[in-house]
Amino acid sequence: MTDVVAATASLELEQRLAAATGSTLTVLPPGPLPDDLGHLLHQLGRSSAPGVVVLDCDLGQTEALNLAGRLSADPAGPRVVLVSDAGAELALAALRAGVFDIVHPQAEVAELTRVLHLAAAAAAPREAPNVVGGHGPGGHGRVISVISSKGGVGKTTVSTNIAVGLAQHAPQSTVLVDLDVQFGDVASALNLSPEYSLVDAVGLAASGDSMALKTCLTLHETGLYVLAAPESPAAADRISSSDIDLLLSMLTAEFAFVVLDTAPGLSEHTLAALDRTTDPVLLTSLDVPGLRGLRKEVDALTELGILTGSRRLVVNFADARSGLQLSDVEATIGAKVDVALPRARSVPASVNVGVPLLQAGGHDKATKQLRALVKELLAGSAVDRAEPAVRSRRSRRDAPAPRRAAHRWLAPVRSAS
Image (tube, rainbow, N blue to C red; front, top):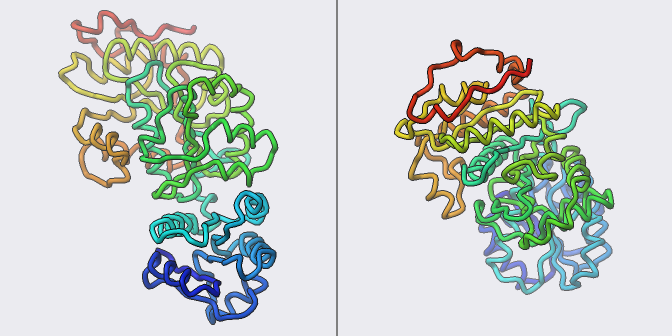
């Protein structure tokens, strides 16, 4: 854990903080709280800021909030955790002061450890959002949407691994949004129990308060921020396409990478997301229904003028025993396959425990392929591939020879000429 500085007059709280941090805790000398970061560093006798500062409001709630605001506003400042039993009455003031979290004075060591670890993870350099290749045109973050025509093709698995992989390179600069509004399962895939969801976020986005919006995000241990789908499918009725558009507008102004796990098909929420997408990731399974569905989806998006930029085609459950080959996919979709994810025992195991493959850091083929996909996305805007209409002009004679067993059900992508 990063170094933690505490300001408290309670010996009992100091002991619990020490147990939560190990040997990384430094306690400020008795006396008034410092006025700003410079004064804090002078008291500590150092030149660099600590990662986390814990302020006990028993030393003065107003003074603690004032100091928290100055520390949070400083680009080199630490994350601030307040200790208070004031409850909701303090929450809004703390939010405006940029406080990371509030803990109760009697919080157990386990709870203190959890909060401090999250604060330490969030204490990465504030300039992290400016990673090379991280922003799209106009200085806004890139929006990476994982889309598929059907469910059951591993979309959440791919989305969570992309997001975790990007967060490993750009911690606190990547956010994953579960846009499968009715049945999204991103939280489960990451072993999270979020307090807030997409419903709360769109309400705060409407207020235009980006600081308040960030309180709806859950910080994953990899440094990834997550916005979960609502618990109830009925909540989807309260979220409009314009809500999604506004939400993404605010998130792209705050994060280098916004990863979207969309619902199967072309819902109004997905279409709103695709309007802001810079990097579509098209996902299909290696079977006839999946390919036919994705081809229809690509055709529809192309006719709408949405799917016109660079895109990546990912084939999941790639297995030579399926009766199809990757060449069949390319002939049907009219695009090159960028990544083929094989069937692997590690995938369902990772889903069941809520630890994505790229977080576990294995070396199996599926993990390597996901890592290669993330590397491509990190490289910035890839060289635009040919438009679907151009690729669709390939004749049946030029396309890879199909396998008769299954490909008789698949016609090459139709010409738009």
